[in-house]
Each structure stands twice: as C-alpha cells, then as structure tokens.
Length: 177
Ligand code: NI
Image (cartoon, rainbow, N blue to C red; front, side):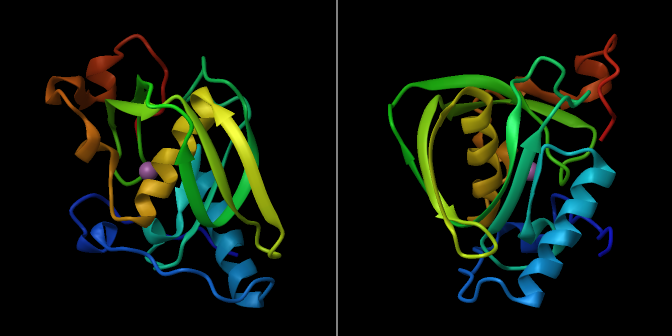
C-alpha cells in the first residue's frame, strides 16, 4: 500500500494502450488496486486509471461520495472495473466540466455520452454489468479513456473551454489540482 506518483500530461506513457488483465484475485492485482485507492484518496480524485501510476493494465477505479471538487455532482458508487467494455446507449452527448489528476490545476468542458452500458470485472473476477447516465457515465468514460491513451483535453472541442481552475472559478474552493 502506497501513494504513488501520478504521471502528468506530457509523459508519453499516458498516450499508450494498456494491456488486458489475464489473472484475477492475485496478490499483484490487489496490491495495484490498493495503491490506486491510496493515491486517489490522497489526491482527492473521483477516479484513477492504472496507467496514471505507470502500470499498463486495463484497471480503473472510481467513486464519488461528497467530493468538494465536484460539489454539485451526483454520487457514484465506489467501483473497481477491470477490462471494461463501454457501449453508448444513445448518440446524445452532453457537455460538462472535467479535471484530471494527470492535468493538475486545470478544467475543461468535454462532450460525453449521456447514457452508457458498461461491462467488466471486479478484482476477484466477478462480472459487472451496468446501465448508467449523467455524472456516473461521464466518470466511466473519462477513466476508461486513460486505458486507450486518451486524456480529456484531447476531447475538448473549443479550446477556449480549457483553463486554470482558479481563473475559471475564482470564487470556488475547488481544490487546485
Ligand atoms: Ni483522468
């Protein structure tokens, strides 16, 4: 268990395609997930993907209770998701603000599918199969993008909707990371 350094945008590792997990319920996989949990909690993130701590595996974790970074956001159940497959349920896209632990101090408006079906496994190999919408759908799409080497700024359609958090939201106490 350890807080691991989070790779930041510019590191080419973040643009690589992560490998599928082939063995579940192993000490290595559990250790990876504990490190991801520790790192996400320490940095107060809504989610983190294994490549962000330098591990090329298709593992993401996410979850939002009450998070001061996302004060108006719906709650999202804490989830470990391995080898995810995402299928949009509608073509409808919705724009919303995102941040990322790999892009500290910034926020951008990103279009995401509003409704989505996702499948995958937890760390024990139990299958996960959910139909989600809204902020939950947004968080899953953001985290799973990391597994395909995509950072949210690559999806911003108007770069004017990208900037420093403290400039965009001067009266907010959103954490500066
Ligand atoms: Ni991210």
